[in-house]
Image (cartoon, rainbow, N blue to C red; front, side, top):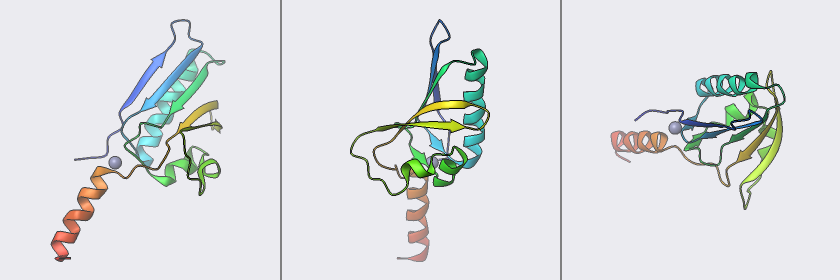
Length: 122
Ligand SMILES: [Zn+2]
């Protein structure tokens, strides 16, 4: 099993809005790919209403939040519902970001931790 980015991109036929829905793992290398996908969306129309939906993500590395300038929006907050925040991402301009209700723990990390415990006989 590996960390994989599974973005679903939806673009309106009139090119006025686009949503990137993330279903995989948001790691640092994946963040670069994600920003590149978002920037392709932005290149369709400079005034495009761009949305990034992280509420279905399998796993999000906290370092990625810094890269996406989302850290202060999520710091220490336990949200009861999925929350929308307005972010300004470098070279992309305004992006509406839907954050998950709780930070998901990656199944890859869980499997790795379990195998380490078995190795150590804990
Ligand atoms: Zn993962």
